[in-house]
Amino acid sequence: MMTHLDSVKGKYAKSDKVYTKVRKTDQLVIGVRLKNPPTNQPPTAGQKTAQDKLAAVAANVKTAFATPETIAQYKADFKKQRRFKTLTGFVFHKEFQKLGD
Image 1: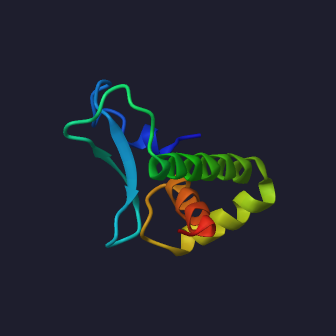
Image 2: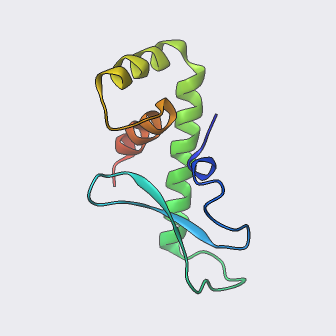
């Protein structure tokens, strides 16, 4: 299963600090490189919340791919749309929407 971080493979160096955010124009989850990342500091409350949300979405996507009925429904919906190029990205987006903001 491909995660969001796999989709940005090769775009960032291993030493770069990257976080994800939702682009406001089309609601896609994108990776953004921090220009001057702080070193050796624990995540803030907002960062921890975002990390927990992304972990929950990743777990939901994994569960969706493990359930034949759910993935069949997602495949049918995926074929009706033109916005997403991969089924994994489509499922990630739908699961992210379910959790809300």
